[in-house]
Length: 247
Image 1 (cartoon, rainbow, N blue to C red):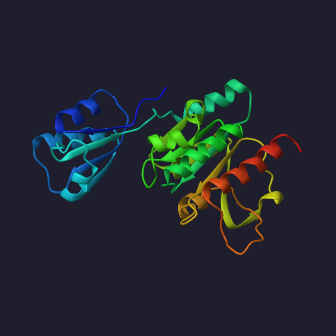
Image 2 (cartoon, rainbow, N blue to C red):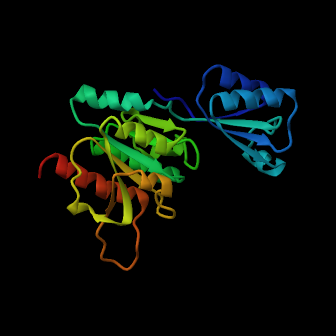
Image 3 (cartoon, rainbow, N blue to C red):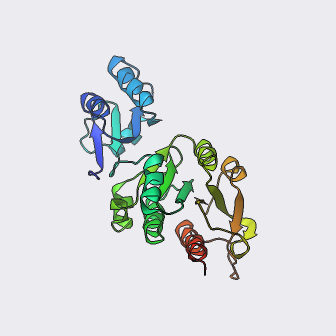
């Protein structure tokens, strides 16, 4: 169940947001501000493994909607995050082998929203994103997903590589999109699978790629060398769909 995206400003409001259990994607703190109340907020943020950004006053003032931020602004997610186990449970409930999307370096909210939409339509059981170097579930993501966020759980994890290894131990194979990989038509993409997608600029991180079982490339005949991340996700996802249907 979702809730509206919100910038929470002011020390008391931010501290209360953490203590009430609200999902905070990022905390912006005025660089050099380390008095008692701010230290208390930072302890809460670290306890919840929230991404903390130290910024100058000009940046913080630019983010502020009230101009009364008192040196701290928290950004709450537009939707609550699921747990990885929730995604696996969804697959069990449907009696299907798990089909997951794992996203690395996706920082554009339009790309994330479009990928979540594709994941839903392709029958994936959920999406996994990292806490850092990634956009969270913002209002733009929710809008671009065209309602898919209401049906497709998104889990946010501290370490993608560790999560992949844990899921491999449970029998899930991982294939990442990579231009130097094996052509997707030559891979067996059936069974429990995680599709790993990176940004078109940086691709999948080196460590994440090294921990995938396969790398898949999309055959391309044009004059440019890469697809938009959400388009690449769609092409690979529907090859997985085709193979899972046995056609």
